[in-house]
Image (cartoon, rainbow, N blue to C red):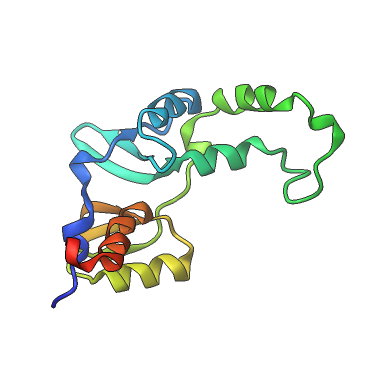
Length: 158
């Protein structure tokens, strides 16, 4: 039995929702809400007909940016009572490019899922770029590996 390839599981790049780098985080959050908690947007710069992928934005990036940097990772201060809405409004005004994560990890569309798993774990990446030669052809979010895990648990259902 041969293992599936990344190309069989990845989302074609033309089907991935995207947002411009200068649009607001508020606009991005409204679009992310339509996709659910594992959703993401590609951050894409357009120059005429040419598009360049700059990064990605998901719920994790927005929530991380909401936490005041001087207290991140420490104890929860008492003054945080009622601060969620204020922090959200501040972050909503920012351009997407200030909150996004760069996409730094890519693999070939012919790579195995085990190679994808290894790269995701090694680089702590939730999203991989799928390439064919020099061209970006798709995206592989970590969440798509769940169906393959279910198939491994229930091999007769596959």
